[in-house]
Length: 123
Image (cartoon, rainbow, N blue to C red; front, side, top):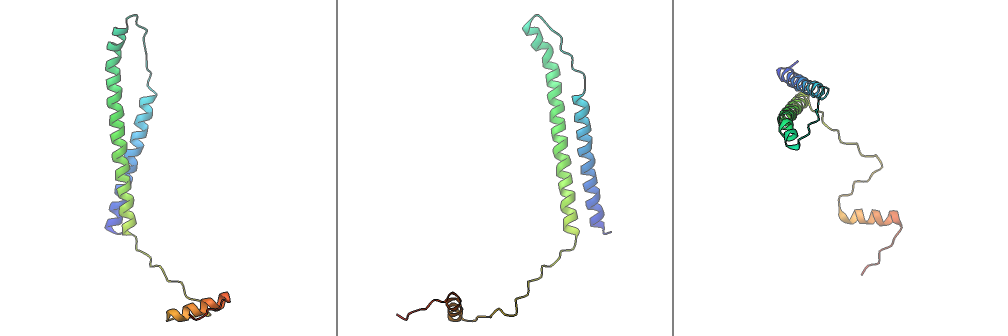
């Protein structure tokens, strides 16, 4: 294998590992036990709920950035792998044996008119 292919595969694997880590971390975060205690005072509820909300939003931002970085690295790895593969040249389809090679525009018009059986009257 070429060095560029090895580098492309390693970048791809790093990106996939980051994505798997992100999904596992998100799953563990979502399966945590959330306890909400009833509080008689509404102001106390907002005060007690603000710290867990900030912590949850920080975790969500962390997971979002980690997923974005993992997908970007994976995309770069795929790009490197696609660029290292030898390009295949497209072959032009061969023309049919019965196809006429018209070199002049008048010949093309004559042939088209004959095929459609139209007559052209000179003006």
